[in-house]
Amino acid sequence: MADPLAAFRRGVAEASAEEERTRRRRRRADYQGPEIIEHEDRAPAKKPDGTGNGKAKPGIRKLDFVWADDIEPKIAEPGLVDGLLGTTGMTVAYGESTAGKTFAVIDLSCCIAIGRQWRGLDVEPGVVVYIAAEAPKSVERRVWAWKQHYDVKHVPLVVVRSTVDLLSIDTDAILALLAEIRAEHGRIALVVIDTLARAMVGNESSSEDMGRYVAACSRIRDEAQTQVLSVHHCGKDTAKGARGWSGLRAATDVELEIEQGCIKVTKNRDERSGQSYGFKLAEVELGPNRKGRVITTCVAVAADAPAASAKEKKLEGNRKIVFDALNATIADNPQDPPREPDIPFHVKGATTEHWREAAARYLPHKEGYRKKEAFDRAQTSLIADGLVNHVKGFAWLPEPPAARASQDPRTHAPV
Image (cartoon, rainbow, N blue to C red; front, side):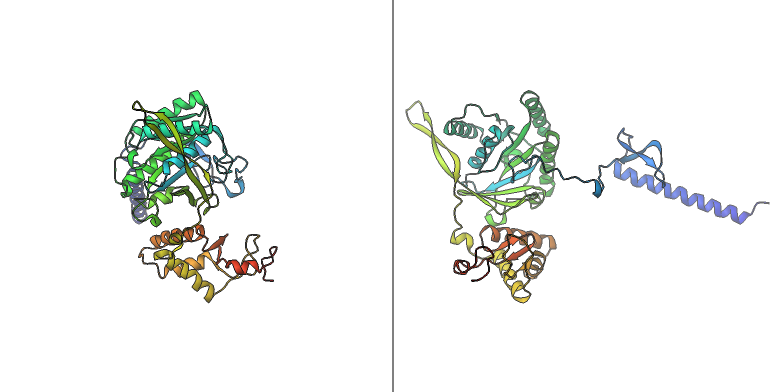
């Protein structure tokens, strides 16, 4: 005779199992949407022992992964601009309206198009597509002037005259154009969007709109396997970086701050940052108009980077807080430097971690991520201005010229 209690327990267990299966189906439906479609790239279902039945598990996408022991860094191939821009990536060049952003970016673009060294850095040549969303006629004049100035006959650079909105289907139109150009002329090395504000119909301070802009740039980068450079404006306070949503900087691989006569690398995800490249504007005659007046424009040419002015080196706001925090950290807990050829062995300093912790106590922001952003910007600015030295997570204060003159040049030790 069957045990009624055992039968009851089996019924409860089966009901619980069915309820759990229903919950899982609902969660999967919420994640995937109302329809779960099986695709050819779905991962096959696996049993706990690693074997599979060869059938695809509906609704689960196969993710690309690599074991640590199988990683092989691909370092043989140089970047687009070796030491500055990678073959693919996202770059933002920002500055004030009169800083010469477009002049500087056109010079960089033309050098890439013909494979000409840029500021002593090797370049991998390729077609450049320049989306002149703000002032196409002005861009055309400046590209023509660059060719005349350097006596170059052929520059594989395309100027897109049409207005675009990367928050709409225009991203598809851009990708179609890139595919057409690539089929006839080869690899697309660089896509320039000048400017960000004129290439989107949305709010620069909105995380939703700017997130869509970043997604569109990422799509162009991935599908065209290219570098995407957005020309952008800075806010009212140049020290706070590019205008609008702060998440743009987090999504950017390289950030270039362009001021009068200077291009500063304020962020580089995979290379050294903090260096400056100087430029000056050389006038080029375009020719006379029908009334006889000679029309001119300019091209950006290499020059020495300007020395930081007293105003630039002035310590105020977050710069002063972060600089004072380093001084206090070194005074309270001086650390010996790591054995690195670029660090004098006799100096005392602080690790970046200790420096950041000290600064965080005094930075006015409430949120931790905003404190980190403020510290990173101030740190980059102090290093770029030569007020702080920093190598591999160790920071120290530069010594005055008189002290350096009394050091052994081989060991940097006092003599």
